[in-house]
Image (cartoon, rainbow, N blue to C red; front, top):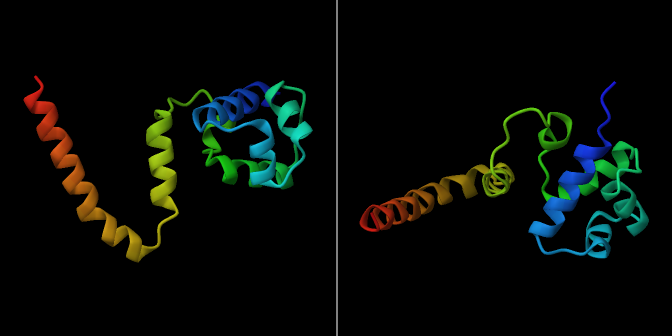
Length: 115
């Protein structure tokens, strides 16, 4: 049987660091006890869904990072971008498409000039 505690702890800790959050802040955001966050990050917890769900939502963690760690993962920035887009309404997505296209075009043009 696979032990998820290491991939869970590593994912929570790295995401928390990446977002510049303390364990207390994460606990507050997910409405869980800070000792639970500490236990998860130290591979000593086997949390129930009622803990995992708000924790993953608060940190915007893709569950695949924990439950399928052998999968080739996207970079953290791409994961975050996908999660943000996934939370958009249809109207928001329609509004964002031309903005994203424009920004990408500008970035790619600039990158081409830097060569």
